[in-house]
Amino acid sequence: MSEHVFEVEGLHASAGGREVLHGIDLTIKSGEVHVIMGPNGSGKSTLAHALMGRPGTAVTAGSIRIDGVELAGRPSWERARAGLFLALQHPVEVPGVGLRSLLNAAAEGRASATLDQRMTTEAQAVGLDTKLLTRPLNVDLSGGEKKRTEMVQLGVLQPAMCILDEIDSGLDIDALGEVARRLQLATTEWEVGILAITHFNRFLVQLEADLVHVMVDGRIVASGDAALALELEKTGYAGYGVTG
Amino acid sequence: MWRYAPINELSLEEFVLANSAAVSPAGEKFFAALAQKLGHLSGHVLVHNGRPGTCTVSGGDAGFHFGGANDVPGAEAMVGSVLHGGDALVRLNDAFLPDAVLIDVPAGVVVADPILVVHWCDGDEGGEAGPAVFPRTCVRLGEGAWAGVVEVYAGPPGTSRSLVVPVTELSAASGATLSYVSLQILNDAAWSLARLAARGGDHATLRTFTVGLGGAYDRVRADVSVDGRGAQSEILSMYLGNGTQVHDIRTLQEHVAPKTRSELLCQGAVAGHSRSVYSGLIRVHRGAVRTDARQTNHNLVLDEGAHADSVPNLDILENDVKCSHASTVGPIDEDQRYYIESRGVSPDVAEGLIVRGFFDAIIDRGPIAAVAPLLRSEVRDRLNVALENRRVAADA
Image 1 (tube, each protein chain N blue to C red):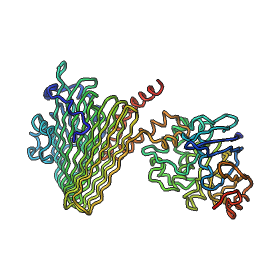
Image 2: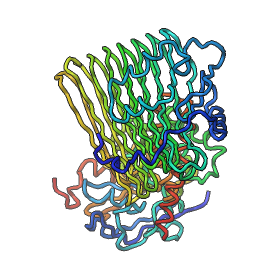
Image 3: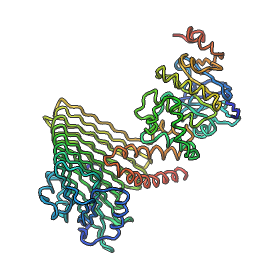
Image 4: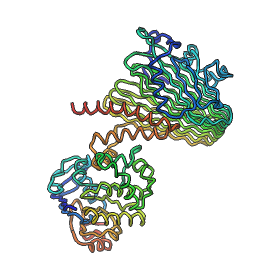
């Protein structure tokens, strides 16, 4: 396992023509789990998409690097090849395209011989019915099945750095546990670095956070260990100038 | 029924009635290759300019009649039995059809494998005027019978013009299940003006899939009527346009009896400067209570010069019914593109995956699984050309 470092420095980004992120700094090393919590509208999802390079989310200043390689300004597929992976809150339905075709294209055919076996192994690891592997991407899948499918992709692609955009939303407690356990295992299996964006504390029961960041109005206003998440659970974001 | 269509550009004097007697070696070759691709068949025939050759039934006596008008008992009762009257094109077909392909499956007979009907449409070598071809196919299923029929329309490649006016009549008696696929892969100079008419009796199932890939102007009018109580239909239609092709799909879902269902999906893409028209009508007759009818049309517009029109219509004369229609016209979905690309897939490859998937999604629903690989490869060959043109245009 090689050591990777993911660095975000002074990141400003806008969505829909409006600046949403006003200077974000993060350093995440291989095997570390960072959690970002914050109220609605604080810019959490914009951060996820600014890091991955979603069209329409523009980085206006700052830097995004994996192992010193600048990713800001590069298209999402190049960022993915550099080692970034984003698990979506709402994985998109793509009719007629199977998971296998997607992963085969992502691996540019290199993994073809072992792909089926790896998909099966990863599906079993998160309790996903292997029959669903041949379905078109996310079509007619439940919320839990979609998130599990995202984990299958993560496990097959084994990126250096995984961003989770509210992957815990809409999951029942069993699915949540399986997804969290899979992620926890990945931090030692290939030492993936994790940036988990979440509303809720409950995700952290099974996924040990090394660092918790509180995001308000497009800035990180506090960082601390897992105790910070527990405190937020009790007191909310009122102490950070957020009302209501 | 002709809105948006370039029918005023048709001049019949540019065509002569095709010679349907001579055998075409090119047609024979095409036919043999195709039959091999489809694997097991219960019957097959090569039809040259509307006149069927030898109708071959595999495995001896299959228990159904298959042949031309002189070979099948009661042929005169079959031709015209589904289509009552018809428009000018049907009249032309009535007047000029050299013969018909008749498939008559008696009550209770199950025809295990598809029956393949290949129409080879060509002109005389060196002939100045293009050939006009009037193929007619009639399929009749008795009570509880089961059969699948595949029709393919093809001709010489290149730029020779032809006018092909096929009429296909399908009827399924009580409890019968009739599956039908047509594939039009004439050359890009051809005019294909097809009419499909189908009727289903009590609790019959009609499943049709019309695919238009070739032709300068490709028109399919598919009228599917669920006449008997509890009858159901699934009507699929697919097209892909490139260059300056026009694909024109008109559908009618007719509900005559109570508790009938119909589900229609028309899906296609236009590239280059091609154009498509989809116009569909759901008609619920008085008395057809508890009708459940759905109509969906998705159009992918791959290039700026291409255009798609979608015109859904409802004509409902009964109260206790469930009808819905939905249609989309637009470019490749940005969210799908981002999702795929965010896995490390380059834009060109992502685009190919999404567009092929769009077609696979309807091909996989087709009523005759054995034709799916053929449809897939025909679509992919044309799609590769369309997507390559797009890349060249983007790089220029």
